[in-house]
Structure formats: structure tokens, C-alpha cells
Length: 458
Image (cartoon, rainbow, N blue to C red):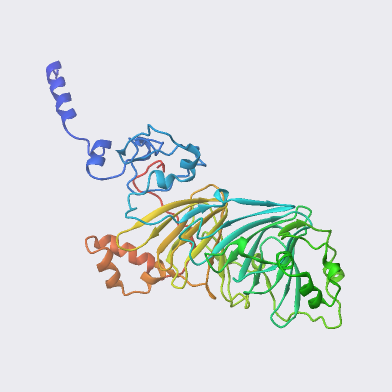
């Protein structure tokens, strides 16, 4: 049987008029995501679609973030700081779930003024730099080999984490007992309010550490310093206090020394006070945080240090997180204190939910500080290609958090399904099956594949 050419053309036209049910156009009309082979690979273009607000590592992928999201937005015509945009991709193109007016919760120490001294430097992040840093303040300090942060004390308690190198600390407790210890990377110290102390870099490369003070209004400039006190006290009074002739003090410093290059330190045994009335402190002012046995999770490691295992630390508690690429510090909140986070390594995004329909997403990298106010829901997501290392620090005697996963798993099934899946019972059954035996997984790394993404691309 022969078929005429006109009939073939008519048939072709008819077929072309019938919509292909799985075509890119039809999938978009149905509200379904496009498979990876149909999507733009650059998320900052008008043709890119991502209904699930996946994270983008603009730095790692060498992308230039622009304000395009699922077809909305426009290009930038005016001045534009590309480096800042790469550091903050979720400010340039916020997730579609962000809403409302939440104050800034991010600061980078690189934006803090550095005070440079002989043998070291210091910079701080306080309520003046970051107005949401209400409960805690942070100081990043560097001491070269032999450099001394001179004898001093504070109104606030001081908690510290050694970031690199080695440091010697000295202190005097409330009962007149002296304390000396040498610390290395990952070690802590804590001095209660008013406890006098000093610090000196030991390693051939000295040391660098993070100091935390239990008041966001703290300032390094308000420290009580030995040389400053001497410089502002009559020599006749100093003479009487130490039972020596006043001329002996003619050459003491005329101003504070703060940080200065000292002589090479000997061993603790060589340098410890030996007078007959000297006594050793019965308090332990230091703790080896990274030497703790970590709590292992599916996506990393967690170490918690608070007054339970570091008894003297009554006003500061902390968690040290090591997160694998792609992992998530699960959705949670802290009921007893604001979270003051310091990012040591890697890149992350954090969304903070503040109730009343408001949420905002921030990006962080090494050297950044993040704030999450008390009771606000949040997560930390490792968006980079390397492990993420973070300190979560709190003005509290104990570390506390609530896990969203655990809470829902320990709530009656009917209550959970009725709340979240009243219009999709099948999805509700799948959800409940996943959470019905809840195990708290602080850093989680689930194996999730996009069923609609044949090639696994964004």
C-alpha cells in the first residue's frame, strides 16, 4: 500500500501538535523540576531553575553570584564587589524561603581593626562591630615566639581556644594559689572574672588563639594592665606597697606595654615560683578539648566542653564540630543562650528562622563569626569541598540543644502527619517511617538522590 506525501505531512503535523508529556515545557507547566541535562549549569542566570533552593559554593565553583532566581531578577549595572559577592552568595540570591527583616548575624574578623604591637597583634568582634553579638565578645590574638601579653585581668570571664602553636599561661586563683601550664592547638583555658593572668608565645612560630568574653560589650582597651596601673600610681605609694625605696621604680614603663617581646622562656619547672609561702592552685584552668573522645555522627564528629567536664568554666560552654562535605548540622535550636559561632575551616551556609514568618540565610568561611539568637531554629550546611570546622560557643554553664528530628520522632504520629502531611498521606507515611525510631544525629549526611534528576546535576 502506498501512502501519499500529503497524508504523511498531515500526520506529522498532527503528531507535532500533541504535547509530549515529559517535555521540558510540560514539566515546567506541571511544576516539576527539569532533569539536569535541560538545566543551565550556572545558577546565576535567568534560565536556571531550582525549586528546592540547593546550596551553591560560589567560591569553590568560581562563580560570580548575580541576583537571578528561577527566572526573576535582573543583571547588575552599577558598581559591584565580586569578591564580596562570592563570599555571600545567599545574600545575592537568597533562598526563596527567606523572608522578613532579620538583623545582620555575620561578621568577618578580616573587617576588624588590628592593633599591632611589638611581637604580636590583636583584633576583636564585639557588639560594636556586630550589634547582634550581645552575650559574648571575641578577640583574635597572635603572639610571636617569646612575645608576652602582659600581666592583666578583666571584669569579664575569659575563655580561650588555641588555634595554632603553643602558649604558656600563668594565673593566680581566688585563694592565692598559682597556676602555670603550656597549651597547644585545640586546648582551652578559662579564667573567672578578676583572675590575674599572663600569656606568652612558646612555639618557634609563637601562637594564635581565640578569646571569648562573657559580655558582648567587652573591649580589649578596658583591660586592667599591670604597667598601666604602675604608670598611674604615685611612686611613694608603690614604694610603701613593696617596702622598697621609691627611686627603685624610676624606670618602670611610663605607659602600658600590652604586648611586647619578652625573653626566651624556660621550662615550667625552671620558672615556677619557689618562695616558702608560694602555693600551687587546686583549680584546673585548662582543658584539652581536641583530646576528648569525639561523639561520632553520620556526617562528622562532635566534642562538647562545658562545666560537666571542665568544671571551672561556669559561664562559657562550647561544641567543636568537624563536618564532612555535604553534611548538615541538623535543624535545631538552643534554649539557654545565643550561639556565637567561629568558623575555623571550610565554607558554610546557615539559615536562621526567627518565627513570625521570618528567616534569613548567611554564608560563612574561615575567620567569620556567626550569631544565632536563643531559641531561633537553624542549621549549618557544609557547602564546600573540604571538611568544615566550627566552634559553637555559648554564655552558659551547660551545652543544650533541641533536635527537630528527635522531637518529631518522639511526638505522636497522628499529630505529626496531621500537621505536615494532611494533603499527602503517602508522603506522610514515608516521613513517619524515617523518623519513627529517632536517633539524634547532630551532624547528618543522608544519601538523598533527586528522583527527577537523571544526571544528578543542579
